[in-house]
Image (cartoon, rainbow, N blue to C red):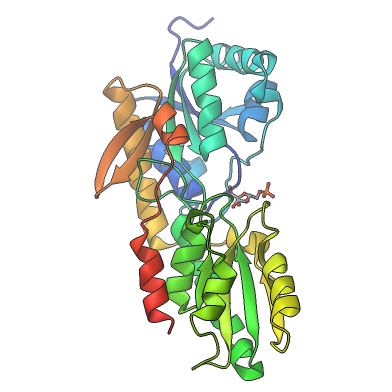
Length: 328
Ligand code: F6P
């Protein structure tokens, strides 16, 4: 029979995978062990927490993963965890496994789940921003965003070869859900002619603006990066419009899809994830609870869940001007 119950820190990844999640798992595990805690990995996000898919992690378990995309803990989008019954089962797993604090790596839905759990039960939760969308308020960058951005730029560089050779307009659709960080910054970095992003939804039609800015006055080909948007129909929608409203242009669509999510994390994401992982254990030792650990102006910051999830992260509007001025 156990005489003294060892206390554990639980860690899970949730929502869409993002490159650098493994680097964060490694950092949390090693920093926790370094500081005298035990660590338990929870598999398949909140689904695994509900089902009790838990295993103790050692420093060896996280060897050789800093360079790998995806997440060794696997991930899921859990419907069950959005219900009080699901969260009750999840809480029971934490009690059974002697997990006294939970570290959740994921996007806004995942941190909203952590917040709900912490409100209903006496559980200490710490969040780490892990999403390619970069849409969490309070941190300058999220784990996975830089890698995805670099992947998009590499793809657009290749697409440009065809666009130039055939004198075509390419509409390239990128991920980001409701946020245009990936679209706007990949457009700047790849020298694209325009970006259509949700944050620029003024009364003026963005396609018309692009055409009237002088498309094809000085160039024979163009690349327009379109942020995915269920409301607009994304790149397909704009390509169709050009075909109808401006016949004569040769138009193609390229939807980059899930290749944006995988691959080895960039050095930036590895460092970010390592700093945030160490920051999460530090936060716990300082008695923080129910906060997301982020980095703002190169300093580790604690952002209350409610703020990280609810507040809109503003896209710097000067980026729109930068792209427009440089795409003449
Ligand atoms: O949140 C990350 C993200 O890749 C979004 O950019 C995208 O809209 C969504 O996930 C896709 O989700 P799924 O992989 O479940 O289709």
